[in-house]
Amino acid sequence: MNTLPSALITTLAQWEVPCEPDVLERWFEYERELYRVNETTNLTRVPQSEAWARHLLDSLTLLPLIPEGAEVLDLGTGPGLPGFAIALFRPDLKVTCVDSAGKMIGFLKEQVLPNLTAHQIRIEEWDSREEFDFVTGRALAPLPVQLELSAHLCRKGGLVVPLRTPNDDLWNDAFAQLGITLRETRTVPVPSGDGEEILRVLPVYAKIKSTPAKFPRTWVQMKSKPLGG
Image 1: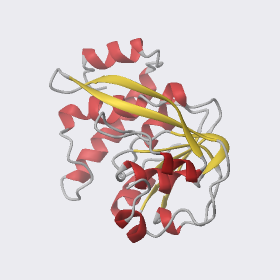
Image 2: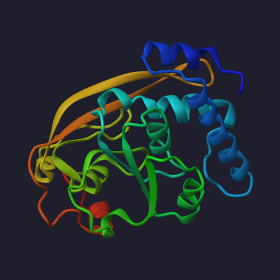
Image 3: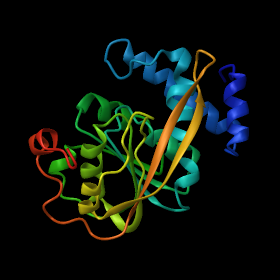
């Protein structure tokens, strides 16, 4: 196993995330393969020395919010972040990862976990609706667009929790059209590879009613006329 950064072990303990050797070894197998493929195919811009913080810990900020046994959807997953980490550390969950880029999904399909599936598809063209308990995504789109891409996929009573930054305006009354409401906001300090911390903002949107069939709109419409814009 890789030499574990002390900040990784300390943070996992503080967050009460089980630190099982086989789970960590599987993560580092994934990490090694990610950066091997990255030498010829652009999958990530994060240096490998910072992957334990900016990929793993950042993904695991979501764990306390995900109900036991939930069906989780990761939109715009890229090479599987946060979806792969969530599935690895929470085998009780069923995790689906979606991305439009074939190189990303092709890589992720090789990273086999029994509770993880991956699909190449454009979200706004997917015919799925209200099938998931927990919908997330990282670096997917500006917040109004991300919420419009996410809300219709979440079941009533479920949660939409995008990974965001302190710069986002987390609520606009126009978002209520999607059938969601902002329940709470969590800000989690995450160690970074350079010894500093970054603040990960987790707005927790509760799905309180069905999303109207007109959402999501086309990508052009969402980008040119975002909700609340």
